[in-house]
Image (cartoon, rainbow, N blue to C red; front, side):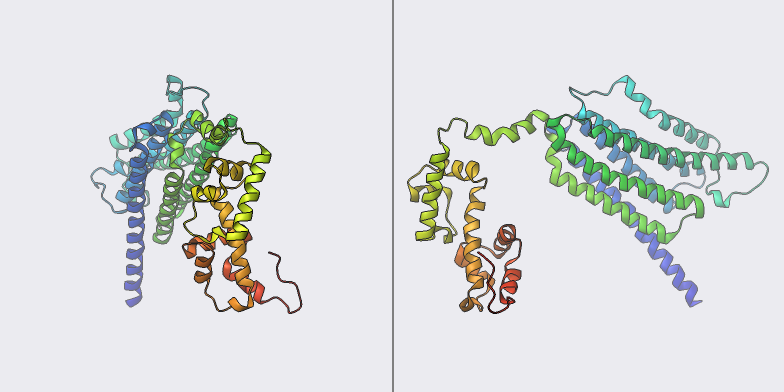
Length: 401
């Protein structure tokens, strides 16, 4: 008796977890949809396609939640099969999104694109038949009478057919979409790299759908599997949200804007008459000031104050560092700070000094900035570098600074 109650509680918990996953996934889809449509500048045809795919995915998750929680009316069992129709739209919509991204000119949805909805039309016709001639509420509970047999067979055929069509079609469209990204123009490759990342995430989502529905068709709804897949859907959707938030500016940029970003550093110094010899003289002056006064240890050191200390214009100093050293101003200064920190970390009389004290003494204003810069310029964290130096065998040379 206690074991039976434990199994029931365990099953209820998994069902609740699965339902929560469906709701969380639906909420995440809604967030993505609002994110895509929130800015007028981002409402391009390509964005509309991916927004439509997101909306369809949300409808699928809502349908899954309603079906699992038995919210569909038992008097109209055909509603159980609504979820068989929506998934076949996702593949074509994603493909059209990529097609719009790689189009050489202005892309519009035309009459020829409607052929991508053939599978949806076929499955929608099956749904209409299901509503007109109700199928069993659940195939596993169907009464095998001679009168119900034709409808049962049609229900099995339509459900299995919908699954096979959607699974095969989704895989093909994702494959075609990936191929399309390889046909893009050179100036679009940066933007299409993000599209390929999105396609990988969607491929994971499609694979989860194939496994989830396939297992349900073969063995029925298993609480543990449903909960696992629901969590998987949520994780992938949150991954899509992360991609959109961190790369969302790609949604709003044209190829011309991308090219502008690439050539902007060149245009910045286009009118400058500074030569390589001029830049070398500036760098030599900076190195002399850093060696003599150790200005880099001043955490408030700015480009303007550094330029003033050597009697040069800030723009000339910036150009010398950017174009002739290949570094940003902050990377240039932080490189000196890291080298100074290495000396302090290697010094025997500084073994008791804390890392934060050393960070402040060389010009960093926070430990996180110190750690990031040190790792960038040395390949080690400050603590790992100190351990490496302390672990050196006596008599051996310490790491070169």
